[in-house]
Amino acid sequence: MIPYGRQQILPEDIKQVVDVLTSDFITQGPKVPAFEKAIANYCQATYAFAVNSATSALHIATLALDIKSGDIVWTSPISFVASANCALYCGASVDFVDINRKTVNICPKELQNKLILAKKNKQLPKVLIVVHMAGLSCDMQRIHQLAQEYNFKIIEDASHAIGGEYQGKKIGNCQYSDMVVFSFHPVKIITTAEGGMVLTNNHQYAQKLAQLRSHGITKDPEQLTANKEQAWYYEQQSLGFNFRMTELQAALGLSQLPRLDVFIEQRQALAKNYLQALKGLPLSFQQQNEQSKSSYHLFLIQLTDESPIDRTTLFNQLRKANIGVNVHYIPIHTQPYYQEIGFNEGDFPQAESYYEQCLSLPLYPDLSKEDFKHIVSTLTDLLSDRK
Ligand SMILES: *Cc1c(COP(=O)(O)O)cnc(C)c1O
Image (cartoon, rainbow, N blue to C red; front, top):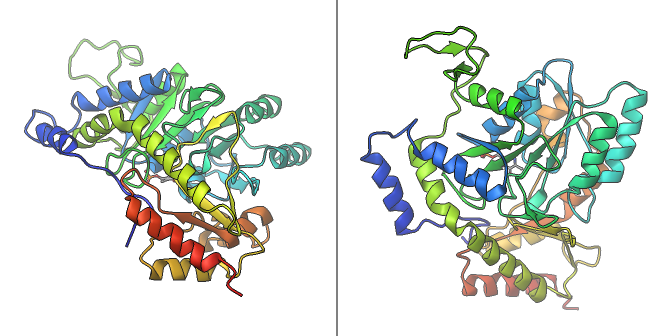
């Protein structure tokens, strides 16, 4: 089966990881801070904290913004469940902002309308978690304006988007947000097997993030409450976790990072080829814009009304042809867990109708020409009207 996404592991990656195994530190050594520094530098952000997953990154990001019981967090219904779960981990409540069908990102107009209503009802969110779907940045400038007007913080769930750009700058620079989160899961753009990172330009958030990922403990002289001389002295100042990334993971990430821009170019070239090859079929594609350069974590297609078959049939037929298409995503609010806490089908109609029509085609740097041809010709056969 051709997968929808796949990591690229080269001999040099293997060497870097094996070298760590025989070194003094397999955790809490020099590789993690080196990886953090390299990513912060790449994105032009001030601080970066590596953790064991993007899910953990979202969790500590939300905690660092002091989200707790009684607070409200908004996010997109078209995302992986982790984008919403992080608020629930903190005891807050979650609500969603419907998407724009064309960009598949949170709709700024819908956000504005929801904010006006929320202000009237005294239900304004404390944090908005935007999701750059498939690697295409949300309209961050507009959303940032709304954040200032309605006084909420912004976390960018950029799990799909490392290497992408917005207004000519790398996603991750935190220009229009308080924090940015990346995922290094193998289907994402670069990988550490499992892994994630939080970036911020805010010193206070940085101190909180550093603590939260490691038991709430600090040794930083600047943060200690007592002036202890002893070298062993440390303080637990908050209730943190062990969300640390290992040295093996950081070594893999460091080894992958120099190829990031090439990965993005390869993904963009493949996307361009798909757009060219699928022209004329009853499909619509995620609408790009001049402000953004997508990292193309996913190549999303949506069936139009002219399609001779429905999405489920198309999915099954493609899988039968050994093409590992996937669906991103089942709207979060329709998950049984979210239905149980009060959401209903019909709550976010754009997300739900998108879900009925969407598929993700295989897209990764090592996708072969042959596989690409097979995907295109199978799709063309299935979607051409052969009356
Ligand atoms: C993959 C993903 C996550 C979770 O990432 P992990 O590193 O697997 O925890 C969160 N949000 C989005 C949008 C994702 O795609």
